[in-house]
Image (cartoon, each protein chain N blue to C red):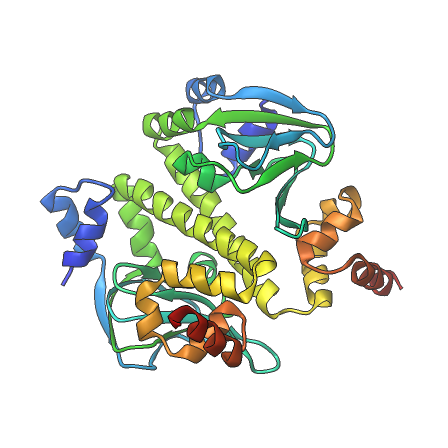
Length: 191
Length: 191
């Protein structure tokens, strides 16, 4: 435990053993079974999760009952409803494990304490959130302008892992296309 | 000049006069005429702009020649193609002044220097980027799940300023609806 978290931090900031030990003390481990929820719509997102093992997805359900997927996250990524986590308001999202998953959780007060005590973490999370913003902006522009085929090709490049591990209907929901369209796209790519 | 920038910083961090004077020295003022470009597709986004006066928009043009608007920004907001600014790669976006505008520009090296010299700015920009991410995630989910009417109502609440100051066809492009749909929505709201 904590090896992947340490490795991820070390990619962007250098930490003493003492600093990392303090950091570790602020996280608590949590296991999820396949299909178990990390967060349900209407609840407050009290934790941010670092994913040591598994895959999670965050999604909303609209009034017609259709699911809309915001994000997949796999090993080494972070998952939360940032809006609810930061404001303490109840969430519009569901976050669910697609595979049995192992997480490291940090509460909002602990996250604030970490950045206040060791300002290098402020830098770390600024870069992380900045990269996340750039990726979200790209996806928004894709959803406004690209064809199903272009979206699928970019998804394959961005999430090669998820192509194998995520059920087809969830990929279709993420891309905003029907399952039939997705099947057609997959066949074209394979041929 | 610099009053609005100072006010915006003061909302989140406290700065000594010396710190703010140093900060000011890293910005340079720039005026744009109406319709003038701050950034054109294919160029590198060398500056982040703080808007003292005016409105800017960032948008892409797809292969069919249609415009897709990522963002409007008005007084007190920041504008850049963050991806190009951070990576130094050429931009996919155009950024244009909708009204005559007055900007304060900061280069990437100066921005890095600012956060390194005064770590409070690392906190400031982390919060700013975090809020921007939350807003972009909301817009993405709206674009995937909401009707034209819901999108228009949220736009009116989020950007009351822009409703008056931005040409109708740009609002239609931002919402991803036709100009006819937008006219119908406006009439329904007014009646």
